[in-house]
Image (tube, rainbow, N blue to C red; front, side, top):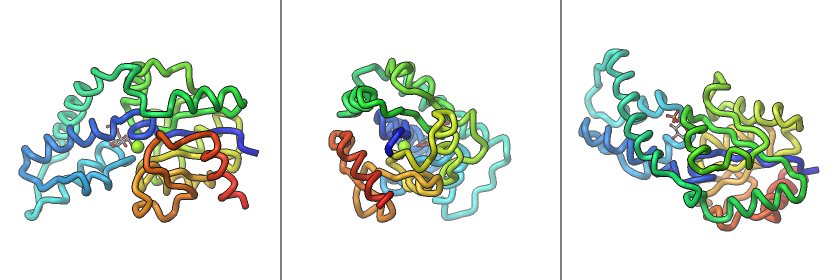
Length: 222
Ligand code: G6P
Ligand code: MG
């Protein structure tokens, strides 16, 4: 039976996907790179350094940055991002998320966060949501980032449940890939056309109810 729901953080629990985008956009503008929202979809769920590599791949001429310069760019993006997430308050949980967490708890379904971000705990602290998850796995606890399933598998392990008894929720293509590789049922939040592989796609977290979670799980298991 369904035992746990494992949530991505950025873009699922709160709209930090937007903050990541704005911070990368500032770096892209400085470098004169044609960084767009649609290209940003590729960066979702992807680690900081890999995101930087993707951003720099937009350059027409090959960019010759030293390792130090790459580190400095990534650090500056993170400084911008950290300034943006300082403003997060409990009001910034995405629609339906607090209600869903309450309902899952009432029904005895466990919950976890599986995030590729090194800033995950800061975001969750600012949301005052630390006590609302049975476990939180962030970038510091894993070696391979999404689409590798490690972060989702680690969450299931810490919860003490089989991945097959879990539903994963993601807003990133790399994230849905990771959920599927972990053999969990998958729910994508976003545009249906972008997630042909997900068991269920919902346009927003406002539609994410226990019934929808169950539906995704049944689709995968039948
Ligand atoms: C999440 C976000 C990505 C971000 C990554 C690393 O997966 O979806 O956009 O690049 O975390 O975040 P960090 O806060 O460690 O730079
Ligand atoms: Mg995300």
